[in-house]
Image (cartoon, rainbow, N blue to C red; front, side):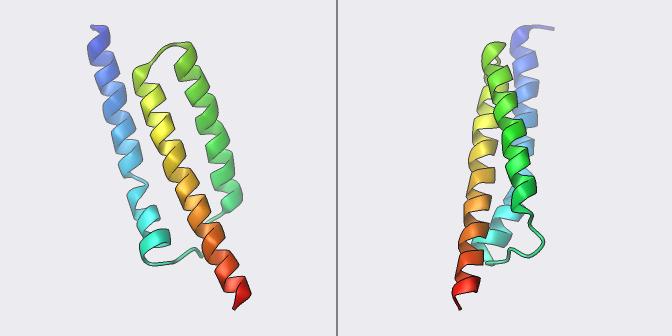
Length: 92
């Protein structure tokens, strides 16, 4: 199978993985709900994604690099949103 098709499969998987986080982002940023979200778990997911990003860089896989950079940004935005909402709740 040509390398281009392999990367296309990886990019498709990456896009689907990113789209899977949209409901979580909406819960935090649109509906202002943070109950049940474990910041610690999201932190561990970030470490795993960072390691996958390093791996993608080392094997020079565009699909892995793009997917992991974008997913890291999404996870970080969720963590920031949750921390922000929880700090607002504590101040009230």
